[in-house]
Length: 472
Image (cartoon, rainbow, N blue to C red; front, side):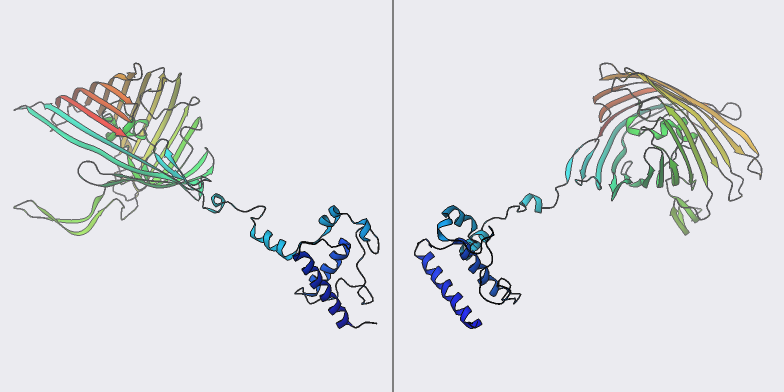
């Protein structure tokens, strides 16, 4: 019996012979199956596993592995060139050539590159990740206004000036998840900078249950909730500020105001508003009447919480946009109604508790837009918060009609009737809107009379305002 070394030498000799044959371009005349067996054995001997006898017979001799057809050996006569080409194992050169070629499924540069975010314009310039988990929208609004006022009195007063009442920049969007929304709005109008909105809005149940925290508008009064860029007139009615509509710091649980037909909001706020107030002491010079702050600072965060609760409940017809005053889209008939309540608790025991309530509505139909609201206010008159007395009532009515989507004549009447005699205020205005790109680019002009019977006030005999708005 031959030794293992003899078998190795014989195999090496056969390998050298095959290399010579292949290099000279000659075809072997022996079985391709036998070549496969010898090649497999050679590869097995040089395998990194070290199992040199993995393809040898059970008794350790060099008997060939049975052919795929079941025969012990394959004769040269029964092996066709096609079979030899199919059964022949890949040579080292072939393996090397295959390794140099491209894989069957090679990643393309586009697949390896990070996803390209989407950018564009849709109700503002936006940038968003491909999966929409991150999105940022940028909005801006500039209002340039000229105001002329003719006041009663002796002598009669005339005043006219240009102003930029609003120069807003707003960032809004979502992060990590569409249900986590945020907004930040700054105002650079009137020669200064101020923070208008800064809040986070979390969605627990789509359309129906959302939690908003930060600084934003109290859900009180449709006209206040409606953006100043979507008004029929240059500015809101005189009832807006009088009945304490505005922004504040707090928390509100709410539904979506447009996607759900039933809307609700209930929240708790500081009650200080969005404008900073002095919390401290001021020393006043009796000769120059100039003051120096000796302690404290300007802030809209109270040292002692005096909470204000606000609630709103409303309903509107399907697809009705009740928070844009003009009907620039020639929409079908739609209507929305809502009621709001505001409780200013006397938590600091200063006896200044108050209650405000209002009922508002809006309707649109093919260019016609009509809105209105009625207000009532009471004031605490004793140490007990429940002891309230009527303080004032008020209302406002507006009507406009968009012609050919371009021109809208508008009229407004507003009135405030405080407690007592001879202290009423009223506003009678007419105006016209010229829409170049709906509310985004429009020219608004209004004019009329404002009367204030309160003692010490200067009634405006006539006022005219014209304003160009650009928004994106």
